[in-house]
Amino acid sequence: MRILVFNAGSSSLKFGVFDIAGTERHVLKGGFERFEQGRCRLAVVCGDQRVEREAALADIAAAANAVPNVLEAFGQTALDAVGHRIAHGGPDFAEPARLDDAAVAAIEGVTPLAPLHNPANLKAVALARRLWPDLPQVAVFDTAFHQTNPPAATTYAVPREWRDAGLRRYGFHGTSHKYVAQRAAQALDRPLETLKIVSCHLGNGASACAIDRGRSVDSSMGVTPLEGLVMGTRSGDMDPGAFGFLHRQLGLGIEEIEDALYRRSGLLALCGAADMRDIERRAAEGDDQARLAIEIYAYRVRKYVGAYAAAMGGIDALVFTGGIGENSPAMRARICGDLDFLGLGLDPERNRAVKLEDRAAPRIEREGSRAAVIVTETAEQLMIARETAQLLSHRA
Image 1: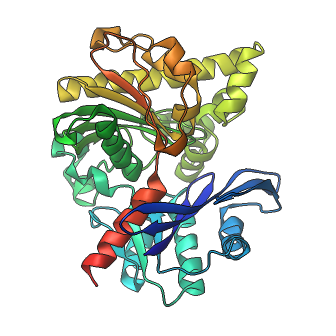
Image 2 (image 1 turned 180 degrees about the vertical axis):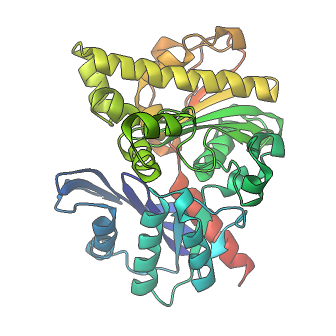
């Protein structure tokens, strides 16, 4: 079964073609990122062909519309199904779902909970349903993996009528956390059901997840993807009383505050840049604002690692993934620097020498560390393709 996967995020569009049969094969890997001033970067790998160039595309919607032309240019138009990453499924989607009109309407209904993500996801869905009307389309939800979180982790201490209206914690990046937990178990050569793992997905969007014996038991994100870690343009944890303060002091309305927390906060607010590569470069050049942003980012992650180790009664492995988690040895070192009390420490040379080709999952803890530290590329697209194929094979 050959499956096209769309993964439309808040700041990038990734897509791929997978051959899901006896052996899984990633036939084409593509992505649009770094959208600035009406342009972006396009990178595509298909067999021995590699293309990287600038494209005159201003946003995620324009990039999604360009995908069919990219597929045609690389001879990848023979498809059996399309799998979509959907950020928020609300309380009703605990498993992948066939995308019919009713499912699309249900996803639209929870879009206010993920205003940066679901609209981009749904635009990709609409495009794919229009371009490939005869192909089955499947949604795989970021929130689904966290449906195993217990009520103690998902329940806000707020009035009952709010909770009855659906206000609860959901968690996101579930597809990524699920994959890296499985990959960590393989790297450790231990059954997933025996491990206590803290997974750190660190990218423009960032979250930590406590995975106890294969089940998500807590996630740093909440009812929306705003809660938790500091992110590229999102604030992460903040006192909800700030809404009243900002309204009284600055006259700001709810919509203005919410928009700023999603689009003008996080690393961008701290130092004027949202990309950690740029921030680390500026910090190395002596920029104090960039240095502070890095310290805040690492501090917030480190707090969650400690909290989740406490929640699970221990930690067997800390896993780094996502653009920052995979590519920043300096950030990994900062996060792990004060975790000796958990029996967790980095080997500096292993940390600097990480290579992630062919789905590698190198261990970078020092000798004698009780907990493993693992780095691996996330494979959300592969998981989406797997789950799409699994759903369709069961319904065949």
